[in-house]
Length: 315
Image 1 (cartoon, one colour):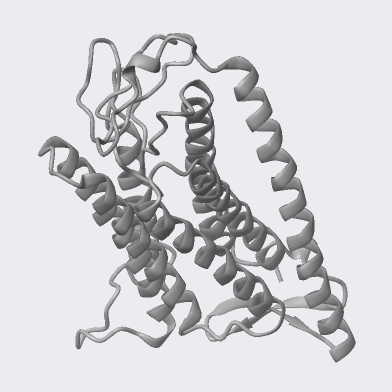
Image 2 (cartoon, rainbow, N blue to C red):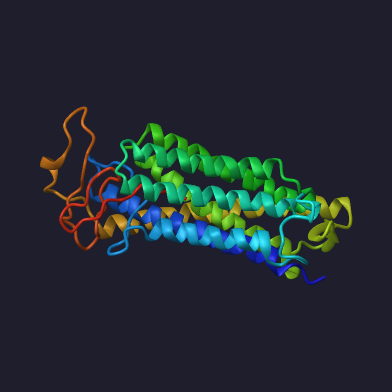
């Protein structure tokens, strides 16, 4: 059986999006901390020169595209509901995936609006919105209408662990805005979230990647992996666990390499001591002394000179 390209692409492309956002955040958090370790306050999202809202705009665009794909594309009918207004049984999982996309759209749109309105406490509010996204995703996959059994179930069980880690680090960021470790872990978790989604898309719905002794079968209108014996199933589940360990080790090395590289390119500055906030005060802005690295400022600050205030967004 040839597998379902939509199922594979529907995991790989969102995975690439999560990985890109996580890498963007990882690079900028390390850069900001490397240059100003004593005054570091973690932004929730980062603007781009001459395109302040590019990151949330891409989040909205990507989520909207995936929402349309889930609800209207690759089905016998473009209508997501039956004639009587009910949801067809074979479309329940599409509606569940669309809910996650909707949560991302609400988050990114709210983050832009909070920044434009300069709402007080918008950094914490944006992180809470990030937490809502991951909580929604965790609940969807935990109570999924699709019977994730066997190999596919093992992949999705580990995915829930990764999403829970993203949720935990987002909540920790609300209480520890100056913790570089929390920001680093959150960025790495988002990156690994993307990696694991791509792995699921490749290993479950690409026939040549299906474990030995298993095959793709059609069940309830969708393709899924079924193993031919208990021994094959046990082996396939063990391979899933091994893949998780391999990718986690690779990700750890990758994050460490990025950290060392960025620190070498953006060393700590010596002339910023007078900018440090006094006790009890929240830092309002970061200077732009290091043009080569384009240091962003805290998300609650105004644009100053040629600088860019890192807006609060996290995906």
